[in-house]
Length: 162
Image 1 (cartoon, rainbow, N blue to C red):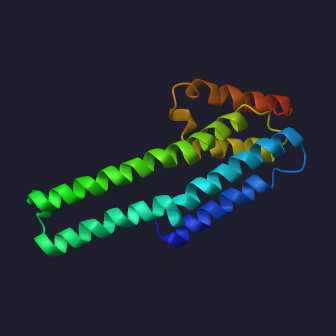
Image 2 (spheres, rainbow, N blue to C red):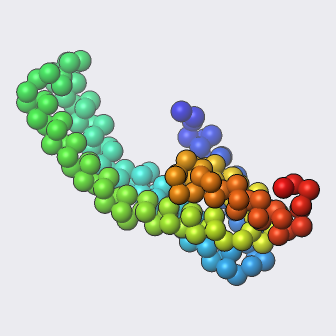
């Protein structure tokens, strides 16, 4: 996994690319705004929201149990019970996070995928989004991704690209 600086740099470049596509088409802007907003909320909760607290609890519990019971702490019945309890708590938080943040984000990403790109910059961003969101891995969007991009390039008059 990359460093925090690499992650921030990559996300900053991605957001800059997205924002550079705005101001040409109101429908694109509306869908892109929904996508960027849901993306920001989803990642922010992991970093400093309720999901971050749950992840911290999980990590802290494992360290505390390892310090108390040693490397094989999970073989101790009391430690295993505590770990299972914390796992249930973090799993519950994860389910809420998926409903509250991930599902709206996936919906926004799919909505943007199916919104005609108004410019070459928007089509290139959409291609990047397909990759970043793994939309090509989803059964219902895998075959659509190339069709959508080819349609965008064709509509933009870049017929030689398709």
